[in-house]
Length: 155
Image (cartoon, rainbow, N blue to C red; front, side, top):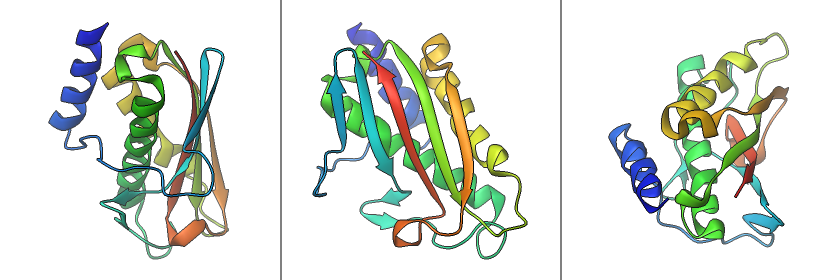
C-alpha cells in the first residue's frame, strides 16, 4: 500500500494542497486511534498556522472562500491521520466527515460548502473516500475560522 500513500500525497500537491509540516500544539490530541478507527479532532482552515480566511459565511466570507477553507481544514485533518496512522497508505476508508460552517442565520448552503471536501475525498482516495457526512451551521467557530472539519477514518 506504500504506493497509495505517495499517490495520495502527490495528488494533494497536484491539487495545490500539500500536507502541512506541523505538530500538535494543542492541550488535546490531534486525533485518537482506537482499534481500527482514528477520530480526528476538529481542524481550522490554517495555512502555516494562520487562518486563510476569517469571518462568517453569508457575510464577510463567500461560499467559494468557505469551500477553500473546508478543503484546507480537510487537508489539515489528513496531516493528523498521516502522523497517527504512520502514513496515508494505511487509510482503508474515510468513514465520516463533519463540517461546521460559521454562517449567518439565513445561510442554508452548508452542504454546498462541504461538497468541496466530499469531492476531494473521492478524487484523492477513490472508493475509500466514500463517506457519511454532516454539514451544519454555527454562529461562530474558534479563532474566527469560517469552517472546521473533523473526521473518522478506518485503518
